[in-house]
Length: 137
Ligand SMILES: [Zn+2]
Ligand SMILES: [Zn+2]
Image (cartoon, rainbow, N blue to C red; front, side, top):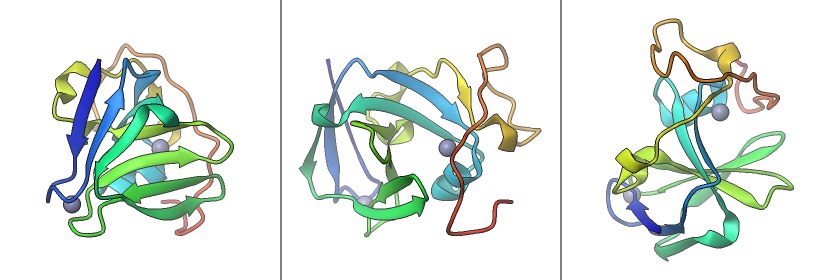
């Protein structure tokens, strides 16, 4: 099944061939800053299963082990990619059919905001990634 998505301004469109490898919440401090929100919801695909059909995200090195991509026009966060990993994560909110991409676990729970009340019965994991561009909150 193919999932379509794109950024707020429409400069960037993508297609991802699914089903995704996994979908999860990430509460880590880097995802919070990258999204400007309380947490990210990430859908992971093999890199080869994602095609940029219009435009390309601008890539920013965001930590010692990862880079992120966003629309340079409207700022919509679009992707997260760890070094030495042939998968990439797309932000679930950027998908046309986001309702079909349901998270199954929590990541980065060391930074979860106490009022971020969602997916209460899902498994949890701490993150090993270290923020380099800002001091962790
Ligand atoms: Zn855009
Ligand atoms: Zn994260």
